[in-house]
Length: 272
Length: 318
Image 1: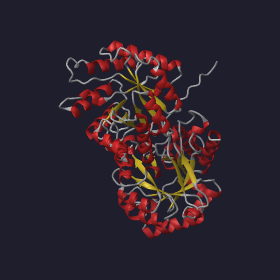
Image 2: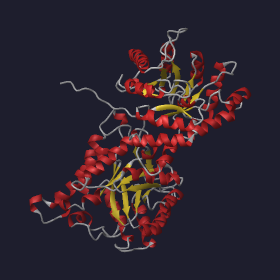
Image 3: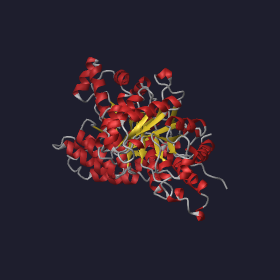
């Protein structure tokens, strides 16, 4: 399972404050703790408060990479902010760009821009693409799959290998009225998206979104993750500091024969 | 007919391990040996993804063996009770890359010899040869925990490969190996899951994963070689897929296992062919098979088998 640690995000108050105060320790500590917890990538999102998002992204990237070698996942809906992060980053250990929709009303070519940036980062440059287009976030299964098909077609045309592509079928909060069909739709969409190419693209999602506003957040996150993994989701943007969540991830990997079993597999999963 | 190019690529590689320490590194070895590094399966991928050349360690026993078949004793008959001279013969005449000093004589059932004896043997062999050493206990936990720390200390600074530790008995040897700067052999009973577990246990004691070599109790040709083959292969695939707890190079004990087979040691069986060839062939066939599963160090015994296996390695790892 490819876990993307979500904590370095300006939406969290400690990170927001650290950005405002230019306090490197808070950021570097979060990077170290998420790495020790087993994160494959560290998400970097400047949030909405920063006045100059490009400069903030560059500062976050430099700050993290001064003390941490874990690959980064640059997270912004604005290509110029991703570009600023990319320019500042050491990409030799790989980098993930998060994320682009198929297209936008205001920018038909947005996916091309993200693809070009991922390509420019070398063979370790990877991209998360959302099953979302200019009409917004689809609620049903078929539209998700149709958008994923278009994304895959476009990336293949550009010679971008499917193992560098992560499709995010977008999970919505289960608490929203009438949204209880969404988890099932996402899993059904994952089943079909994985048939669109060989090898299939990676499947990821912003896991914590499913429990937005709910009372039992951690439990909902854990259970849905195990269910989605059984449908082939092999990556997620998660709170890697949630030990129970990481234990579920390790156990699901064992049960799906993705990792070798040993009695101390939980320990090995974090350490490994 | 055109042959399609099919190459699997992997994201990780087996650790590289250097054994032995020269004078500059605080030891007395005349050379070091580097093994491991495979970034693909044997025969898979590009040439630069292959493992470093596998090596042959020839067994030298601390005391003259009581149960070796005649045909195996023959080449060593003058040195069987002189470990130093035995080791020298293995290096100079049979081109051993390493010497595996096996302490059978300290086993309660095979001589029950004491620490003074074991330490004297280590010193004698260190003196006699310049290649790196493997220091391998008797398999009796109690006796190994008592004697092997002394053996380890006697070779301190030589960067030997010391073993073995198991799931049930790992603390003493792991600690002493760490203290004396040796590499460690983790052992599992033909069980991939226990193999991983022992590595986790040793690593949990602070022993670096990069200084471990794994050992799965070997099965010879005709005696479970399929199991050991598939386990070594599975371990290699786990290493290549990035499992840090399984990214260690592997050692196999082919000499001991092959010569336990009746096909190798039975003298009075003319219908099976000349016993002078049969034993060495059994040993060589077992070794060559396991090299293809992905093994980095092979423990061997008969010089003729060593010659065949080294010729095979020369061909494949040009």
